[in-house]
Length: 326
Image 1 (cartoon, helix red, strand yellow):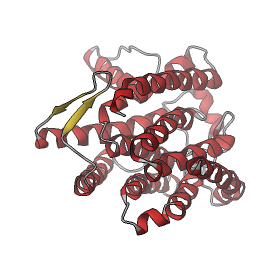
Image 2 (cartoon, helix red, strand yellow; image 1 turned 90 degrees about the vertical axis):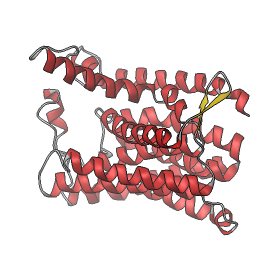
Image 3 (cartoon, one colour; image 1 turned 120 degrees about the horizontal axis):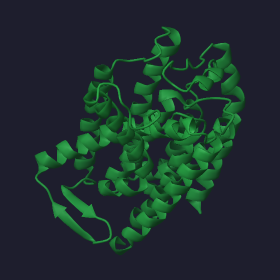
């Protein structure tokens, strides 16, 4: 019941904050510049306020810190680690957005700068989880209820690859109104339920608060979007998704709950590789793959509904796959 209340409080705070934050972002001229390589009709969205991820990040921070104060006093810090991990990724996104808006550089930070920052954050987070006893070098296999022991060096390389890949895959999903937030909502519901059943109320605080925050943000981000989350929000969400998977010591579950993110990232990789190998030919009309469907005539609302629906099904399937772990 406590985590449900936390989700509701986070929802209300996000909705309330949005009433004040959006006008402030407009006044600061924090408008999104639409990339020229995107669908031509997206140019009408140019100037829509970005960095809206702050709208759910701040309420989640308040809810987790205040709601988990007694747990912190008793030495329970796991929920703070996931929160801090997500916030640092959100900070990287904020810097990226600031460069885009203030310096009018549409691509923001360079790829190398982002990679190095993300690599450092991933290493620090894995070290903290190991120190806190939440991370093992055993890979839990859903549906089979077995774990494979992996060499620590191999595991860390794998973990870093998963974290950096997941965060950027979520970022790629944020391409049309409400998509990244809509897809991440059922993923966070999944993690909140699993955390509550397996580790208790404190572990479920962060994903529960984020469920409420995302739902509140969708009130402004659903088509037609009044605000975009920007890299501030999408990198925060990416950190939350992979952060929860590793905090619960089940990173392979991302293959199921994060299927949409994976397909989005793979579509870009396939397109770029095929384009180079064939000297200009394409597999998809445009990538990430949500643009492929958009160019094929799907509305943003239809893409939102289908992608979120697929994620809900995959989250339910993932739940069945880990039942024996409880």
